[in-house]
Length: 377
Image (tube, rainbow, N blue to C red; front, top):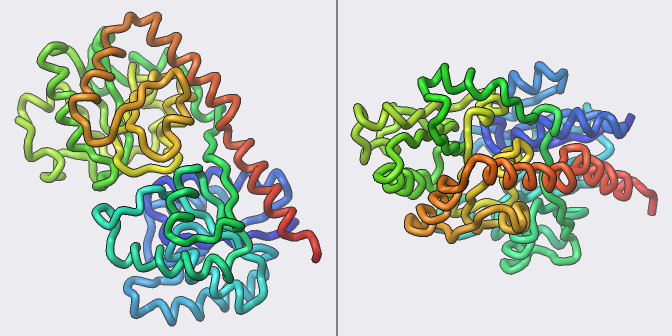
């Protein structure tokens, strides 16, 4: 069995970390054993990887000053594990992992999963990593794997090597994300939501690029005409202890309809309690949560970022980012549709996800690239 060393910046709760966790078992079916090396010292997802029997190594890099020591630790791990290919994930790992792999003459692939390169939403260090990555992409990477055309275009525009670009989207497991109507009442009962209420769902960690504020402003306006509306929000930092998130809310009133659940491991089940899914991000590439909602058969209202418009096709409602007014109109249109219409829209999105965006299909694309990279010559 061939071995892949996946090098990732961290193992916190995020799109890349979650996707990699789901991808590795699928790659094993194609004959690729995986180990995971992450740059930082801690990570909420470490236990989840260990439970799947995936070997995980931490480099313990907690500041830029630790990077040199981390580099030599990484090199030692790679020499010991002797992978056939190094697959790096996200900018910092692309740089450090790419350099380590090159010194050991191991074929390397970069993975990039971001399309918004604005300095307004990215840290200065991240912007520096992007600039360095653009220069090194011409020399240091066997290929650059993007999960959206939008990400590819954005990075090529700032100097990433066009000849190295490969694009294929994320995928979700249709067996894990399976609609279960019997769970609808169970989820709602636990949250104190009546069976006949309309529920909008929002799943995203608290981050400036997810634009929770615009979403909350929109649903607040909608509730003026739909007082029975409930909202389920899931994600790291999405709880009542987050004063940045809740500062504009009347807690006593909002807690009757706004369910801030924080990070949850049972998101697949929670989707069953929703009638509509909304993504309000100002920066995405190929968001896992939109694909999850689609394959769960939920009508989707999403901002026009990354490849979202391409993902949802003709059956999703796509609005400009940061527009409360447009988001209100789109969500209201779905709310005002009857239940049969919403189910029909959701069924079409589920079919599209099952045809184009399954985890098995994504894993097959990765495996094909790996096989090509290992061909001699």
